[in-house]
Image 1 (cartoon, rainbow, N blue to C red):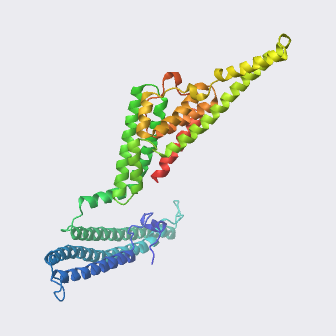
Image 2: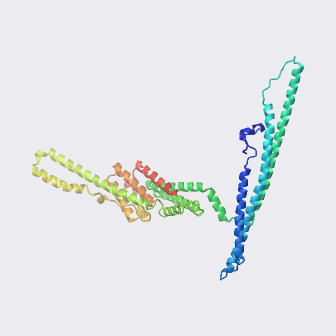
Image 3: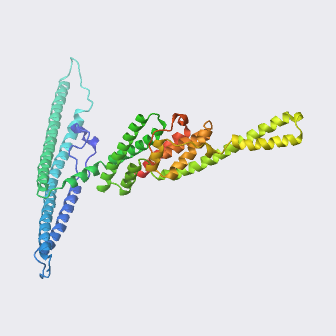
Length: 438
């Protein structure tokens, strides 16, 4: 039978059950612990037989004595564990009796309080004035007497409830002491067991903190490339390196205690070595370089086309000064000069800064340096083009993700202000780090 809900305890001045608890659920747990104790005891008996040499003494050989000794030691430890389960089961069964008695007393107190409480709270209009009849005076006296009696009955009900809660507290305290005494035996949890329990309790928080550290470290690694000044960049990179290392420690704790994945540990370890998104960014960098190179070639052809068109317009305007043969010769010579005036992008490719080249060797490969060089070369030629500027921003972001984390390029070829493409790249890197953490 269920306990009365909170609002029904109003007659006793309460809005919640004063003696909550489920004796049936406690009884089930006590029975479960007793069953576990029996299972352990059966295993102890089997180990005792092994420790004694087996039922027929057939266990012989070089390691027989060691096996006998180990079996006896393990049986002794398991025997203590079985005793712990038996004692806790008995303590829970003892607690059921006290809880049921306290709950029964509380129901009795509630039943006793309902009548007096209703009487004390009923609306009554008493006669008043100086010309009261004897009967009216008697009615007033009877009312006050009944109110005093109702208040006494309500006070008695509250006193009974107080006895019920006192019984509950005393019983709970006594049996809690028995349980603590039962588990305070020679079977001790190791520091590793306590550590695993702690990590398990806060695994959700450790996991979230690691994800946040990884995202911040990745963004710092990328953002460092857009900040002039080696000292500032170095500070940011050291901070990012430290955040990545802290995340690795957290992931290692989770994996070692069974609350995380060793794959996450491997990813963070790789990120710490290359400090960034690692080789996952190399393919994206290569794709950007190829796309940027194609874009640059198109822009070169566009420049040549515009120059040829201007030459043709000039000759058309000066048509009266040259005959057709002269005009053809001039255009032929001019066309040869156009290729020199508008060379291929590769001929204008500048050298990468030392820090960038060195870091690309560490975090990437020579191919990564070549791909980033292509992006930089096109930007040097067509810095005013929005598409080229976006490619440089994204290319530097993924180069940083490879682990270069170096000073930005020289002021002569400094990157444009962060664009929509840059913001999109940061969000992509953040989502990558967040996804792999899960």
